[in-house]
Amino acid sequence: MRFPTFRWPVLLLFASVGLTALGLFEANRAVRSQRRIAERALHDYAGFVAWSYEQHLRELFAQNTQTNLGAVNHGDGMHSYPKVPDANDLPHYLPFNAQCGCHRSRYGPDPVMFFGFKLGTDTLGVARNTHPDATEGWEVDRPMPTEFSALHRVTYTPEEKKWINDTLTKVIHDGPSDSRFPIILARRDSVPRMLVYTLMPTTWGDTLVYGAEYARDDLSRVLAEVMYGQGLLPKTFAQGHSIRELVQLQVSDKQGNVVFQSEPIREWSLDDSTRMSAGYGSLLIRAQINRAMAGSLIIGGLPTSRLPFLLALLTVAVALSFVAIAQMRRESELSRLRSDFVASISHELRTPLAQMRLYLETLRLGRFKTSGEREWSLNNVERETARLQHLVERVLRFSRTGRPDDEITEQTDTRAEVQSIIEEFAPLAAARGSRVEFRAAAVPLVMLRPGAMRHIVLNLLDNAVKYGPAKQTVVVRLRTVGNAVQLEVADEGPGIAADACESVWRPYERGTTAAHVAGSGIGLSIVRDVARQHGGDAWIAQSAEKGAHFVVSLPVVASVAAGEKTPVSAVHVPVPS
Image (cartoon, rainbow, N blue to C red; front, side, top):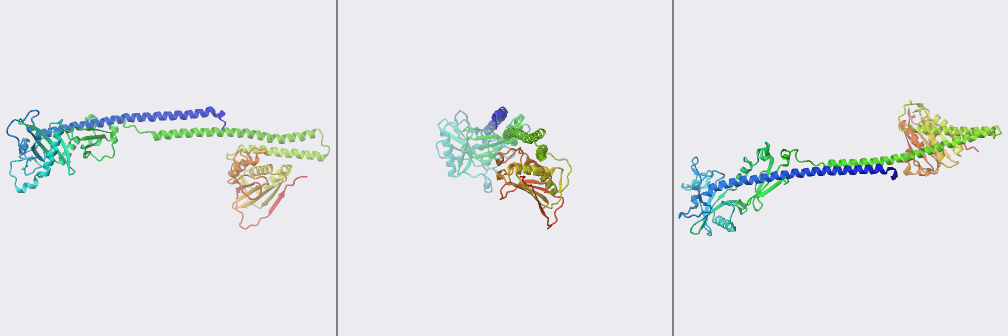
């Protein structure tokens, strides 16, 4: 590519690609920035959900533990009454329910067990629920018939009592809690246990520990109640959607064991978390906004990534730029070829005109004395006139290359047509010291437009004579092959390289062996164009013989009868002495 010619267009193309890439980068960056802002807002929403859940859970825990253990807790005061409450006394502090005739909590679940012990001792007293259906509430005064024992909570084993005593003692010694009724989530034999306790100091120096245990299913119900109960999210936030649609939530204990999960969660993305204090079991609350519902919470939803589309757009822009550069290079090459073509045609036209002028000037000056000399001069003028006519016809036909010809086809005797064209070309061949040998069998008629065979044969003969050696024999064969008439022209020249057998058919293209001979490079392109417009084709056959071997195939009107013998004739154009 001649860079100076296309320097500014190429620079503009690359600048446009660069600006396109910059615009795409900025657009993608804007989308990513908007997405980060939207995701940050959703993270904040998730943080609000986790915080709201924590507050509701704290409130429910406080109400339940206050109801169940509040009667024995004096706040900052000390117990001075001589009667120390027994573990069996604790259920009596629960509100009485006349419907079941038992004591049960107003808020949340009832404990499955009440217990108490003096801090620093290894004794643990437990209450015994004697209500016929322990799931309804508590009774401790009713005699417990044997048949009811299966319905009651089982009592603690000595090992369980010791574990509860040791666990609470350790927690109490670790430091004061931020809750009046601390909650402990612990595991024994891989089984989660939920304990709640309170301290009651006495004026005589002892510290009494009272507590209760809740069933594992009760804890799950409490956590679900807070999740799906009313008031976790403001109505303006939910916009008519249920909390189950908007939020995914998970609660886990201090060791990371999941104790509640609203639904299976594959991955965390738009999430936030908060951890409750040790007084509330160090529960970790993790919440995230359902990505599918982001559009209901964020105006316009989460901005979608346009990166694939932007990359495709950039790729198209780059491809179009390369196509434009390739087209400019092609136009430049075509411009050069046209210039060379005009120069070559001008030279080829000038040569016969100069010859004609020379002979006519000689005749005018009377330098040819005899009639034989004058006849020889006129023959040369006629030959150069024929050559000039061929050149003009070639240029005119090349101007119509690639465009459909609207002339009507007619049945043509190709054998007679080719023989006539060879006889017409004979003087031109003789002028170059060559002879043409025509070997033809009887062939069927071919549907051709007027002048079609003339364009084919003259260009092939001119090509063979021009690039072949002096005193060569150009062989023209005409025969039937299948349902086609096949014309073959073979010369004795240097031939055509195998890698150029296709390129020489393109306009302005010439073989490497033709560089030393003047020519326009349009003859073979005319031959193939004419052949293909008539439903045929043209190609170069590879042969072991010396020279180039051109083949043109044209479809016939009717097939030759199978097995028909046809004579072969030959026309020789001798070289004049």
